Amino acid sequence: MIIEPKTRGFICLTAHPKGCEQNVLKQIEYIKSKPTTNGPKKVLVIGASTGFGLASRITSAYGSNASTIGVFFEKPPKEGRPASPGWYNSAAFENQAHKDGLYAKSINGDAFSNEIKDQTLKLIKEDLGEIDMLVYSLASPVRTHPNTGKRYKSVLKPIGDTFTNNTVDFHTGEVKEISIEPCSGDDIDNTIAVMGGEDWQMWIDLLKSENVLSKDFKTVAYSYIGPSLTEAVYRKGTIGRAKDDLEATAFKITESLKDINGKGYVSVNKALVTQASSAIPVIPLYISLLYKVMKEKGIHEGCIEQIERLFNERLYAEDLQLDEQGRIRVDDWEMRDDVQAKVLELWQEATTETLPTIGDLEGYKIDFFNLFGFDVEGVDYDKDVDEMVVIPGLQS
Image 1 (tube, helix red, strand yellow):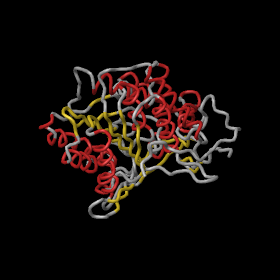
Image 2 (cartoon, helix red, strand yellow; image 1 turned 135 degrees about the vertical axis):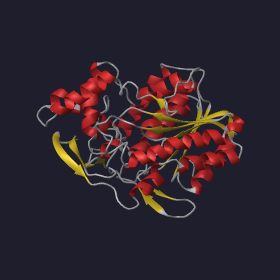
Image 3 (cartoon, helix red, strand yellow; image 1 turned 120 degrees about the vertical axis):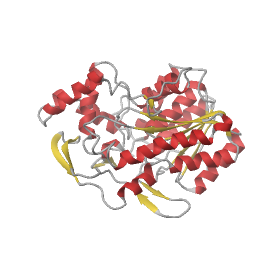
Image 4 (cartoon, one colour; image 1 turned 180 degrees about the horizontal axis):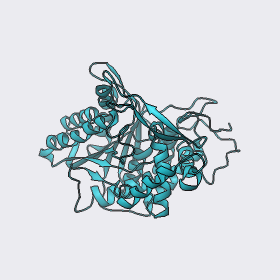
């Protein structure tokens, strides 16, 4: 079939298998150019099919020849209906990994559930024996608690006061003011239940109790802080409370892993175009300006560059530097004083008319469509493509 992008708001409803494949192969080539002998060898990635999770799987496999198990929740293809992009990403990764003699298997299902945890544990025991790294990179908006059956839904809201600032509709380029009402009722607790650290801790507790964590085991989850421009809706909003909980969980995990010299870390990463970030008001405008500034300074990074730097220069470096809250910071280039001062200056000038010049809205849009396999260099979108792609190592 011929597959074209179909968008609704900040979501693209279709994905292109060849475009997704090209994106994955490009990331693989980048990591191949930066090999290391000091990375993980047996890795479980929770949320392995897109963004930072996918980059973590690629970096592990092609940076240090790691065997990888990926857990994700993706929509498979049907005749005449494309799969979700993470499905095609995972298929492309596994096809290439198997060609290159690397162990790679995947489990598709709800990572919050006990069933998927048990299935993953069984696979680790049968195939790997143990793991030396777990990457936790879930970005789900809802969670059904595996023990109580209660369903929680996260919200993107400020706490206390209505938040008003500018944002951009990246499809049309219109810069406009937006107001977001503050959270109410159980919004904070529900968001923490979905995006906080409880599920990460549950994964670690299960795997440790079953003795499948190696000595010197490491686990890392991903967070974001951002600038003062976005803090009311992000770091000081409901999501920020969930990130606080996630970061506190890292210390609890480290304490629970003392006997195997294990460590739990949170890495604070750079603002990037993801399916999740596209949904957050104000963030698209901020990223458009940030991209322009960082590209001009020659310090722009995508997911794969961020995670390669995290693994090689932080997690597996001899001297791991942490901030005063005990976090790893690979948002350090984004948060440089000169970068933030320039972004703030441009923010005051940003209008529908000026943004195409002072920002990088085009780069934002390309990155957004790239997430779904569109606007990728070297792909002929007029060509018939088979949507029925199989993930070779998918466990039933």
